[in-house]
Length: 114
Image 1 (cartoon, rainbow, N blue to C red):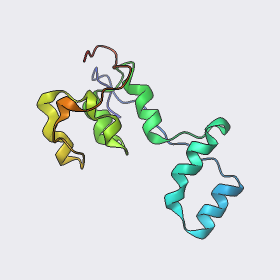
Image 2: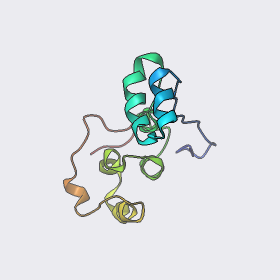
Image 3: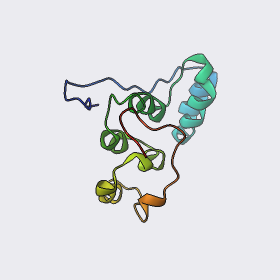
């Protein structure tokens, strides 16, 4: 992902470790269940993409726009978008019906106030 300060890029990775449950999911072709396997396997080192993006957003390494555009669950990142970028939500498949009323997370990214 692009760094907010323009100094380059930062790696953001989803991590899936193969165990018997993951192998069965893949063998059955039920890949829609992989997200649940990643969440369940967090203690084994698995990491969901949105969690990795979140960890770069909170300290301000990536911008809210960059985080939103790359996120899978865009609703989690929508409250961080500046009001002038509300149309971005529609273009990216989110909902910007009333972004000012979107639920705000407990913690804002560094350098941003809500």
